[in-house]
Length: 367
Ligand code: HEM
Image 1 (tube, rainbow, N blue to C red):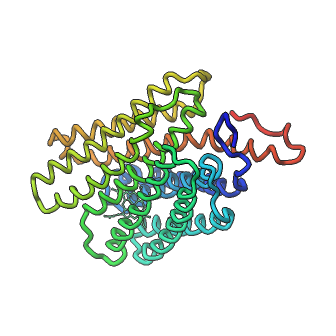
Image 2 (image 1 turned 120 degrees about the vertical axis):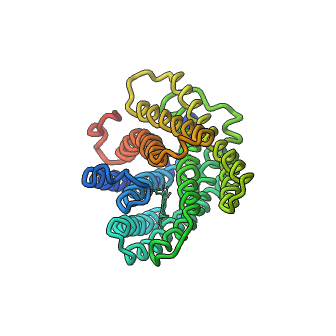
Image 3 (image 1 turned 90 degrees about the vertical axis):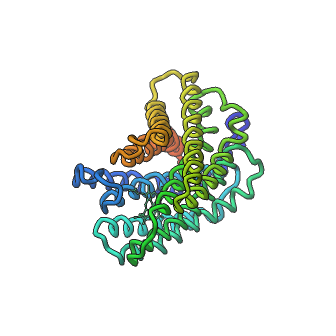
């Protein structure tokens, strides 16, 4: 373990392990972009159109989760110091299940094809559960439990909840069963606020100070932030489920809980933005621009949500959900994951090139 960076570089897995995920993530992002161009405004007219659901999952599962899984396969041994068992086999199997399952899901949505949706379910479940099982085992073995390990553990737990709810909502598409839209909203919140945001926050504690040379995150934040966000998610889910009985009290409590989640994310955005303003490394850096775009979109999304709880006219605006989704998925998550990839991918290539005989001078500049 390097005492300066806290990284165990000797434990790094073969580069093919993370790289297969990093190389496929942009391809699914590209597929989402092509669908946008092809369908034009119809792609963002309503949440429930087949093309919107296809684009949503090409971005969330195809780009975000693909990059997150690749990054975790690299970070668990290097940053947490707890290697995954048989990383080559694990990454191959998870990657194949994820790619096949996602292609089936996206095409199933796009062509309203039930068989493809049915095929996607076991494939995505196998890939994601295999990854969640391996990551949990590694995280349980971690020698030190710091804020990043806690964030990762909670994110993996949220992934399992997201998957279970995903399988329930998928039955609606596969067998034309009626599944209440409440479950879809809980599914997407566990996916975006749980899996994706918890992971980004947990990893930000390490990578923002390390890559951008900022001061560390405040101690109180590192101790409690992700745990409170997770508890808030549990509480909100219970209240939101009870609210569907039509109780006004439950509606008010569920709105309070969801506003807490939004404000909590706003706090993360403001603190990270301010830390980045104090960074020592002042050279122009595209990764900082991505971070800042992402944090501004997250802040806007949070404020818009809280205001819509207080102002019925905004809540009833038909475009609100689409705007929130675009700010959260494309504005925040895609930008920040891009920011991380811009640092992690060159670093990985540089690190692995060190071991190639006689190639040292051919290594491209990190920028
Ligand atoms: C981290 C992973 C995931 C995230 C972030 C995510 C996100 C979302 C979002 C945002 C929506 C709402 C779409 C909209 O309003 O247009 C949604 C709906 C849906 N998701 Fe996911 N999803 C994830 C994983 C999955 C998986 C693994 C499956 C299938 C096994 C799945 C199946 C579905 C289905 C069927 C719907 C539509 C539900 C309906 O029509 O009511 N999702 N998801």
